[in-house]
Length: 265
Length: 265
Image (cartoon, rainbow over all chains, first blue to last red; front, top):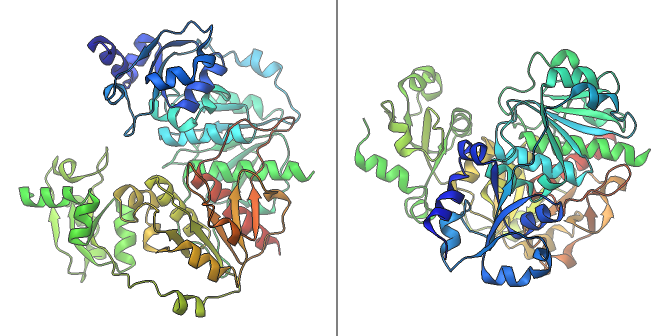
C-alpha cells in the first residue's frame, strides 16, 4: 500500500516546478518503462501492479530499483493518464552538461546526417510525437530552441512511446546552432509558401527546421535557411482547403520524403 | 451574463449522452466557428466575448444565430479547453440518413478518387488530425468503421481545426464498404510488414486503410486489401528503433506519397 507521502511526491511531478526541484520525471506504461530501463536511465523507483512485477522479474533483475506494488485502485491516485497503466516509473532527469557548441560541431558528421531543429514547439503531444517520428526514421538528434516545451513534461514523455530513451533532444540557441550547422549541411525550412517538396531531390544530410504551431519559423532563423519548402496542399482538381498541417504531421511528411530520396539513391 | 441553465447545457455537451439527446455539439475557436458558419452548418447559438462579436459582425449578418456575449471569466465556465478561446458555438448535428451502400457505390467515381478508411480509430486527437490531413490533401471522403470514435466528440472537433466542415466522415460497415469499393479501386492497407511504400508506383485512385492504434487492421478486413504497405523504418546505416508510428502520422505519410505519385504523373 502506498503512503500518502508517496502519492504526494509522485503526483507533484506533474508540475515543472517539482520536476526541477527533485530532478525527477514520471513515465507510465509498459513499453515506455521497458525502453527507459533498457536504455540504462537511472530509475528512482517503480510503482506497479503485482502482476507487472511478476511478469517483469527478468527486466528488474540486478537493477536494484526500489519497486512498490500497488493495490487495486492505487494507480489511479498517482497516474497522470485517464486509463492508468500497470506501471509508473519515477526517473532521474539525466544530467546534461552545458551545451558546448564548439566542441559539438567540431566533430559534427557531414555525411549521411539528417537531423531536426524545432523552433518553439509548444504542444507537448507534438514534441513527443516528433521524437517518435525521428526514432522511426533513424534520426538521432533533435535540436530544440530554448522556448520549446520541456522534454520531461509527462505528456511529452508519454507521446514519445519510449523514443525519449533513444533520440537525443538538445536544447540550445537555434540561431547559433543553425549558423554552425549550415556551414556543413543545408538547412531546409517548412513553410506555407516555398519550393514544392514533391519536386525536390533531397540530400541525405540536412537539417529540417520546423516552426512553432501558431507562428511558424522565427524571423531571426529565416536568413539561416538554405531552402524553403512547402508541402503541396492539393486534390486532383483543386487545392486542399485546410489552412495548415499540424507541426508533427508536417515533420512526418518531411522526414519521410528525405528518407525516401536517399532510399532511392 | 450567462444563466446557470446555459452554463449547464453547454457543459453537458462534453458528454456523448447529452450530445445524442440534444443533437448538438460544441466547437470552440475562431477558425473552427468561422469554418462551420461558412459551410452553412446549422448553428444553435454562439457564446463569445464582446470583441469577437464586434469583429465578426459581417460573418454573423443575416445568419439569425442567437449570440450571447460573455463577461470576463465566463468562457472558462463553459469551455472545454485549458485556454478558452473568445468564441464557442453550439452546433446542430447534421442529419445523416441511413447510409445506402447500393445507391452510394452505384455512382462512386473510379477516376482520380483517393479516399481513406479508418478501422476503429479510438483516439479523438487522431481522428481530428486525420480529417485535417485529408482536407489538406483534397481527400473529401473518409469512411469510418462503426467503432471509430464519435465524430462530434469535442476533442475530435477541435483537432480538425475546421476541416470537419469540409471533409465527409461516413460511419459504415467497413467490410461491406471495402467489398464494394475494391471492385472499382485498389485498397492499400498500412501494416508493420508489407511492400516498401517508397518503392511503389501509387495510383491516383485508391482507398488507404488505416488500422486501430493498438490492434492495427482487423483480420476480417485483410482479405479485402489489394496491397499491404509498410513505411520503412530506417536510418542510413541501421533501421529506426521505434516500434510503430502514431496512426495520424502514418496517415499523413501515406497520403503525401499517394499525392506525390500522382503529382509527378
